Amino acid sequence: GAGVSQSPSNKVTEKGKDVELRCDPISGHTALYWYRQSLGQGLEFLIYFQGNSAPDKSGLPSDRFSAERTGGSVSTLTIQRTQQEDSAVYLCASSLEGTSGRIGTDTQYFGPGTRLTVL
Amino acid sequence: AQRVTQPEKLLSVFKGAPVELKCNYSYSGSPELFWYVQYSRQRLQLLLRHISRESIKGFTADLNKGETSFHLKKPFAQEEDSAMYYCALSGGNQFYFGTGTSLTVIP
Image (cartoon, rainbow over all chains, first blue to last red; front, side, top):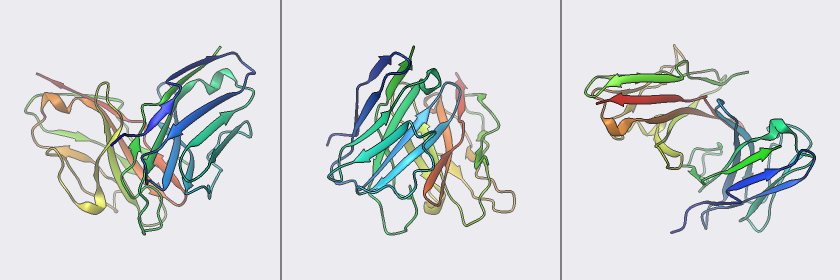
């Protein structure tokens, strides 16, 4: 079946503009994750959804970042008033979430990422 | 606080030589640890998880709670093992990745 897809694959924007990144998870996967990978850095956890709800939003870098998930499927990550330090690859992953109650215990399947460049 | 540390950004070994990619973690509870791998031009994917105690592609990783380590090992490296390896930890409502180690296996 189809894997996780993300759009756009590349986004170039001007400082101060808003951007919206989209993630389509694997059908049936209840858990969805957003990460940010900056140059030379590891993957920085941003937010996790179980169904439509995100139990912990503290990973979002600032209040300019927000994410939502509707219908237990597609998710959007919105960055308002973009800054140059927001330039990074934004990765989305999805998983079946088991009964362990711990995040990420089921295999995460990653999308190809969206490369965001803020000029 | 840094949850997962991978001290080596780059690691090169010769084909057939043993390889060990280091990972240390800090977590107050009972950790669940993983290794993810990204081959060239491919997506990030799970390699193995400690709870399964499995060997994947000849790689193993043992959780050492005393040393808070989860090093990834393979006795005989192959060229196709060249990739970026990330150690990761499941904690609370967040998931932590290390900064990754780029492994190059020299023919």
